[in-house]
Length: 243
Ligand code: NDP
Image (cartoon, rainbow, N blue to C red; front, side, top):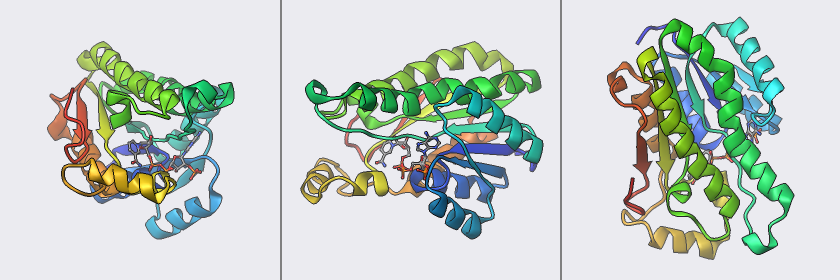
């Protein structure tokens, strides 16, 4: 890789995104990590890693354009975008509120538009880019209590496949990763009995580690992955085997 490559990771201050940001930094990228509300976690992450943090809402189109401009003014043109920020608002669909539907679709799917749109023209002009979108096993198979999240994450897969085709001739690859259950605060929030049931359904017998997702991202970001575009990489301990 070129030592000055700049990588932007949304949701890069906690959980999987923090592992991704650390890994890309270790690979030699200059990294920017975007977060939304948890200032304390972002400050800790910045202090631990030296990675600059930026605060905006990935669901806010104008905010993303302004934020990306700020990152590029500070660090330079972004060549690797990791669309990782995501939230859940779980509940059975017949009781789901419009607010919970909109929040999940906005953060997990609208963000594909807002962030990628803000960066793709520059990538096309420079004829190089790596876009890596974090979907989910539940976008592949659907999950009870997560109609909103499953719909958004399935949307991420369609977005990835179409965008990959539009941009392949411009040196830009677009890929999705579908993690299974990974040991982060998002999963820690589920009740212990549900967590035990989840683990019993994973053939390798454990949750994934954030680093295992970060390693897959580092590969897809690298020049070694130049022929890999429009793919959906499952990293789920064998819990759901499909493509
Ligand atoms: P966490 O909840 O641990 O971290 C989420 C990160 O996203 C935080 O940095 C958070 O910022 C940021 N974020 C949330 N909303 C916004 C927003 N509107 N604008 C900007 N940043 C935002 O999540 P995980 O690490 O568990 O998940 C990361 C990704 O992986 C998500 O897309 C998730 O859906 C996906 N995934 C996770 C799985 C798991 O088992 N954990 C399984 C499959 C997929 P802040 O700290 O300020 O809140």
